[in-house]
Length: 371
Ligand code: FNR
Image 1 (tube, rainbow, N blue to C red):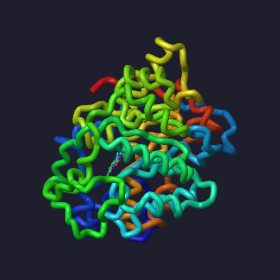
Image 2 (cartoon, rainbow, N blue to C red; image 1 turned 90 degrees about the horizontal axis):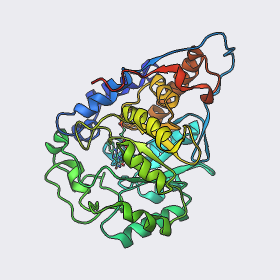
Image 3 (spheres, rainbow, N blue to C red; image 1 turned 120 degrees about the vertical axis):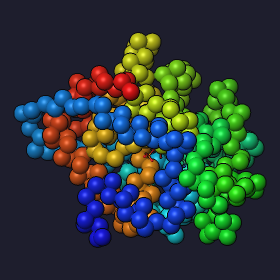
């Protein structure tokens, strides 16, 4: 169908399922074990309801914000997802180009299909990009990657901490990863590649399960860019990140692709905000330490729920993959346009003129913990 018939982010998934190469669909859509957490990522948003305000002159509304000190036209960023070329020959460049058009930030994955340099080169002057880091067992290699990223203008480093080992994604495991694929990963992985059990297993043997809190000072010593931990799932770990002076955390379960029965990021957000207030007297949003959420965000209403509860911004993954797998860069462009239109409308309906007006009292999250 023409893009004009795509009315929401779910539509991209339905079309992708019918038209995408089987292997790409298996890798992108899969989650771990029984995929309960993946389902919960959506369900958790359905347990939060709005308390909209009226009569507040919402003629003009503004949904722009600041993420780690950088302007973003929406409180949304494109999160890191590996292997962009499985879905489209231009891979991650589709995301870079659409992000430029819409003034949003792209997080470049360690395991991109296009090389890191290609993705940075494709950015417009002044376009902000973050980098997602899988920590290599070879720390000299990690150091090189981080310093190269910093030199090329990356503005923040998101260290993935929820993947000491890859989860069992059985849809993906039923596929073999073809060495002759033109989708071969970029340069950051290793040469020990196991091709017998899907894309995920093939590319992740280098990740260091030995990563620990005591490594944080080392990361700080090799780079000046803000450090954020991606994949935090409890208030205890969020507080540790805060106490170690990191710039923030992404409350995330990796799109349900790691530990099945991990809770959704939006649910964890509620406990994090509560405990930070109790233990450190801190409220959110907060410039010294920012909270991000990803997993299951498909509507501006999801975005606004996270903002109301204290998140600075949310990450979106699969919808953009489905969008470029079906329509290339125009698909991603359209997906971002849909989100923007939804943000404008829902801010009005909520009675908020700006993102800062979206406050905790605008949501009822009292049932968030009831499973
Ligand atoms: C991911 N994600 C991910 N995260 C990461 O830190 N490094 C990575 O290489 C990848 N790769 C990846 C591939 C694919 C195909 C998916 C779907 C996800 C996790 C990603 O950053 C994010 O946490 C989730 O995708 C968010 O959930 P949604 O928006 O996909 O529901």
